[in-house]
Amino acid sequence: MNGIHPKLNDEQVRNIVQGPGDVEWRYEMRRECQEILPGLFLGPFVASKSLDTLQGLGITHIVCIRDAKEAFSVKPRFPGQFEYMTLDVEDNEEQNLIRLFPNARRFITDAIDKGGRVLVHCNGGISLSPSFVVMFVMQHYQLSWEDALHLVQNRRYCISPNGGFLTQIKEYEAIYKANIAVAQYPQAPRGVSRRKRSDEDDDEEEVR
Image (spheres, rainbow, N blue to C red):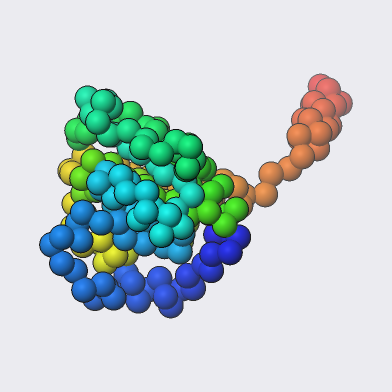
């Protein structure tokens, strides 16, 4: 994360992962949002309904993740004040989150890189939105899924992704690591490859 937000160093990340968290958790805090990383907040829908609270936290962008059946009530409240991304999903174990995650990740990253502060929420802030935030944390700091989950839990103790979402979080670890490996693998320029194939063809003609 660039912009005005300092990125956590390896020791800070490790301390949050290992816990105990530096938050004295109270039951009523599940109705509030918590800062998971510098500039990235996670919470329930109710935390997105108070303009004073959002402005007090310096929120600039909001990711609203909702079950399609909740669209009439779980919706952007202040479209003139904040930049929103709204994701309509099915809040059940069969919902494919991995397919939706890249756009959400891009929205969050772009906002924070510009110095913005992002709130990610679903209705309860327990399963759906935390799953997206765990995947974001995992890829951003190149963590295992267990460490990413522990980091988020040590900031917002009440999260509990359902079984299907947890399976996808585990699967995403392999996906993002494979993408990193592909990006780091040196690839010859396409023109070089074509010349090499042409030279090989010429050699074969000479042998014949």
